[in-house]
Image (cartoon, rainbow over all chains, first blue to last red; front, top):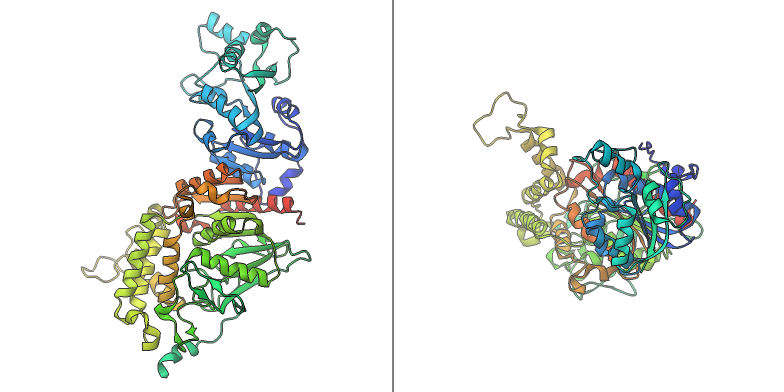
Length: 216
Length: 386
């Protein structure tokens, strides 16, 4: 998974500009030349892509030392830190977009993290695994077991995901927090967008992952 | 005057020397107007036509300007950062113009306490004014001015060198495109000051220190300075690194001798470190430079609000720490990085896993080299350097 990094890592910048499908959907939401904070940026796949192809002024925050090292070695400005603790250092409105991809469910206080995203960024882009997906429901209802699938491969006792929610749960939270949902979509297991119109209940049943763009 | 010959007998050290502060003196933090003074410096590589490829490397407490020489003029060893600086290396001298100057107050050619005070014709000794990190940097700006460089592509340094990097960015943000403060902090901690004080007391307790006038007396406080170095050297290593290297191994003997001889290898090693240090370093310089580090606190003039020191700074930062460094911990680096973030600066902050302690920044640490290299190349691209 971790590409071997050579010290002349500027060469790495030249790799083909194809990224994970779900990350591509996020990238498509972002206007060129904007200021972007990618929280939980991993090895910098999205951040590097945005920097190269959309010329954004991008920054990253990443928990794993290895991820941070790999990002900085590619010339990306990334800090070690986590969403629960380290967002408070960023000034208000420092970014046009604050991205939290596949991380919300692993935070200690998702609600506080969401409000921090929209304090730091004009817009927040959030993606998470949907616990309302039919397979999760199937696992619970018929197998009587916690959902386990390619998107949620880790057993309940080892998973870092401590705050699961469904699409409907998330929409309800946005409403409670008075946040505007600018865009929303659900993705299938491969990360491709599902065309389901505006039927949230369908989305909640058929979407494996959810992707929202929010503003205040 | 046979006594003063101690300084005159030295052969001149190789490299560049620039006399500065002749027309406009250097205003020290202590209020003293100082000058003229000399900075000894080395350069590697060529300055490009638009003078945009200069990297200033700042040396640590006992470092010097010979950052990448093949043979150090005193020790005969290769330069202290030859791993990093050189043709085709991370700080590539085929691409960049690298400058490293001996700090003011130092003892390798820059004006310091062992040089002659023109007012008296004798070595300065303790009449030399107290120097701060900001004074060192102010002196460097005069050198950079004289070299005709407006903006440095990068300022890079570890430990005390990192303090200078931060000071550059605080005081001259428009003159620094990229900055790498490594294994350093925005202030000296109480523990760091405490260890320095032990070192200084060791020097001053040596009767050959002669109240700082040892050069006039034709003496050298070698024992005191060696003890200072031995103590300091322990703080630069980690407990696991020291144990791995020496354990409880005995020095050229099969059993302990029931004496105070150097039974253990670690004792012999430290004595060697102390001894070789006094050959290349001046005791009074050691007092002055350790004091400069102790006085360093970048947040002081902002009532502790460090972020204000970097307000509006456009420099790219890469703050690097080492996991086993207990002199300048990752926690300290994170304070710096958080302040930079709060000031909306462009900052990377990386902790390198290493069990080699503070000295790791001088050693072969592939992860560190990978990060530094990526940062410099990314910045070079941003600056449009080919």
